[in-house]
Amino acid sequence: MMDLKPGGLALIVGAKHLFQNIGKTCELVLLVTKDESYVAPDGVTYNHPDPACWIVIGDGLIRMVDDASPEQSNWAVCHPGHLLPLDGEPKQESRTRYTSLDLKARGSRRTPIFASAKTRTLP
Image 1 (cartoon, one colour):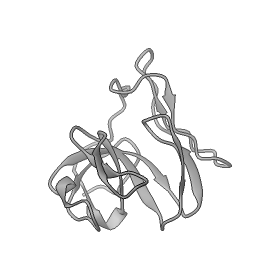
Image 2 (cartoon, helix red, strand yellow; image 1 turned 60 degrees about the vertical axis):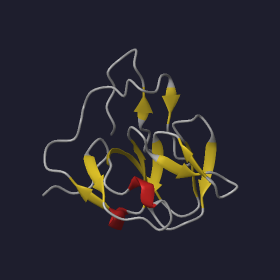
Image 3 (cartoon, one colour; image 1 turned 90 degrees about the horizontal axis):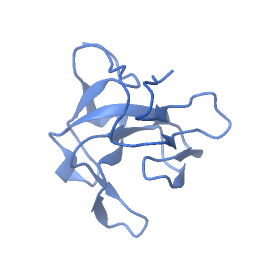
């Protein structure tokens, strides 16, 4: 079994609040740490106040919005302990669902890129 890596696939096997995501597959995008800022797939910059979690994308994923209500957004934040890596190599093709969006961690050299015009891979 492989480790959790950007571009890899995982099965969501647990949740603290959003049990609707359990059983869904997702693609791992970025591991964010406590107090790290990032630009999410929706283009909004967020500060991550919790322990390290993965930003994941996948069809039908639900995330918690600021007012603590669930919203279907096709991306979510998942604790590493709630993800089961799926065997196989991480995906290397472009993320066609999102165009021209960058995920950048402020002050970090990690820069996952979402792009459909060119094939770009996660570092």
